[in-house]
Image 1 (tube, rainbow, N blue to C red):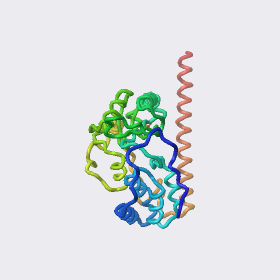
Image 2 (tube, protein in one colour; image 1 turned 45 degrees about the vertical axis):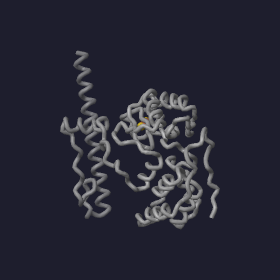
Image 3 (cartoon, protein in one colour; image 1 turned 30 degrees about the horizontal axis):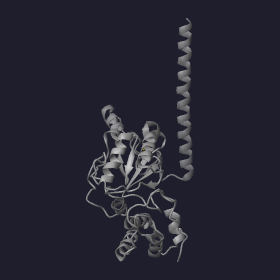
Length: 290
Ligand code: FES
């Protein structure tokens, strides 16, 4: 079975090693992932991460291997691999640096960070920086959409680990430390690992870093702290036998009637509140006129 799988756009420089072949060990692990799910094809996303761990990118060979293990076509695998931006069909660096340039991060400095890194590394979006003499590791750069970490804007990711509250200067320091092979930690604690190591974790083969760093940082917990300080709690969920206050043993007609009644009652109470407010405003205006 063959596919018309493209290696993607040409890059500014080649990354580290050429992809290794899919080995028997990798094939066995692909089968292991597929076996985790009642429907084997549900394992395709972690399987593609394993291919990236083994080969550095999603290669045509990796696509064929996934298709064979799952008993689906290469075109189906290709369709998934080309849909999600976390799957790369071209080389990335040992450390893939993503800069969020979505709205909030952009205005908080993400655009400036991205421009600074492009200039510093001498590359464009989605390219690998040339390996200089003495560099221990390679770095690639990509602008990312929102990472759902806006409370720490502007954020950067290295192999999907967060670096919060970045500046152009801190971003340059980070990529230089990575290229020099120095150990670097996420601002949330975990040690940064290489692209291939991170991809193996995403395939469901954990490393020893799982408990490094907090589950949630202070900025993400502000709302929770305020709720506790003010005694705010979530409304109680409905009792199991009811849904929206409507008993489950009623007929559909009963339920429709109860829902209509509830809507009417709410609308009436809102109307009363509005008219009371309007009356109060009128009374206030009359008092002011007096
Ligand atoms: S806009 Fe950057 S994390 Fe949301």
